[in-house]
Length: 239
Image 1 (cartoon, one colour):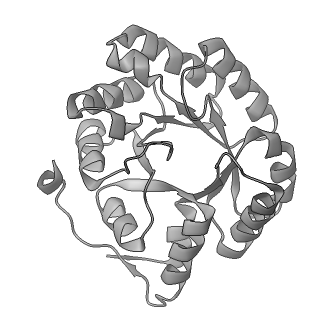
Image 2 (tube, helix red, strand yellow):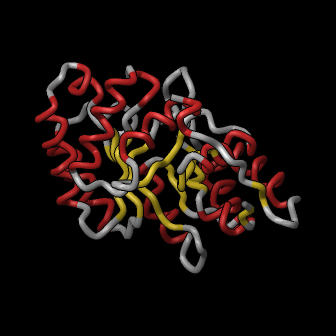
């Protein structure tokens, strides 16, 4: 199977989320979105009003992050962020799950946290970041089950702030758990086109990638004039 460049580009959520993100990064990110037709853009909240305005007339959606990257803020804070950011025109909302609560088996608290954000983002796409690289397989399964039960649109593998990357094994466990109940976004360590197409073959439909890596991958993808080849992969081989 092959996909076109535009089908590929629609899956890319380009970002600039380093602690020293500057206006140089902001301008480079906006220019990259316009040149490569990325599906969505993520940057720190201080830039939201400007980037929302800069993206008007483009195909790139405006994405926002809640409680990023820790997930440990109070639920009320996340709800306030959700309402504020969606009022600015956010079309994609990514929230970070409280991983500490999950690892402490405070599942009702995790559910209530996500459910409150789902209620505040009912008209937008909601992704829940589970930081899979910090979890055991059993914890990944539990996290994915909670995310799907709460009605989120996506379960997302990571923030990109953990030392370890998202792996094909993480994606296999996530997909094996959620099936078609929700979609999957991979983020954190997706730095090559080869890894991206393998993850897409396993069911990933969105990718969070720092804009510099997104540019490099896109340049490679644009060279494939006959389409980007998606390999056949058996999820069970990676479980």
